[in-house]
Image (cartoon, rainbow, N blue to C red):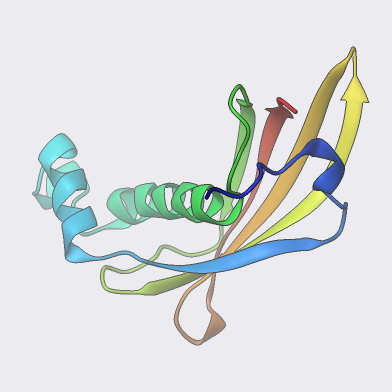
Amino acid sequence: MSASPILFDDFVPGALIGERVEIYDAEQARRWQAIFGDGPQDGANGAAEGASMAVVNMMRAYLNVVTPRPPGNVHARQQLRLRGVPRCGEAIRVTVHCVRKEIRRDRRYVDLQVHGAGEAGRDLFDGVIGLIWAA
């Protein structure tokens, strides 16, 4: 039996929705390098790959924490501020908070704040995911 989807009314501004640990592992690095290249000139094993992995793991955490989602949501915008670059093999603890919700022009808007921290609480990123919530 599946759980009921998260509804707009369920979001509470300021509240922690949940957290998840994602691992930036060798398999993620291999997939990135298969697309962009595996040499230093391609950004492999460096800041470009690490920045990409911050985004990937931010979204993976969101998708796993904010679930089940109703069909029809729209990922309207995203902001990300990098504070540090994750390293391959590093565990990234990602927290997801609701920062605001509002109804504008008969649409339900939800903004979620995500924060990623690496080893020893090292700040990696802060982001906001803006969604138009379907239900």
